[in-house]
Image: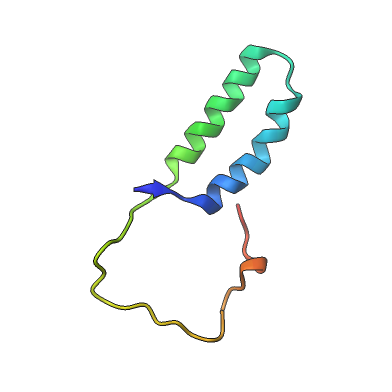
Length: 70
C-alpha cells in the first residue's frame, strides 16, 4: 500500500497555511493530526506483476495540468 499523492497534495494545500498561521500549539497539533489522518485514509494498493500490459496511447484523455488535485 502507498499514499495517494494526488489527494495528499490537496490536503496539504488545504491545511498547511492554517497550521502555519495558528499560534496555539494545541490547536496546531490538532490540525497536524487531522492532516495526517486524512492522508493516511487515502492509500492505494501497489499492483505488482500485472497480467495485462498498459496501453500507452498518444492522446491523453485527461492532461496532467487539467486534473483536480482534490
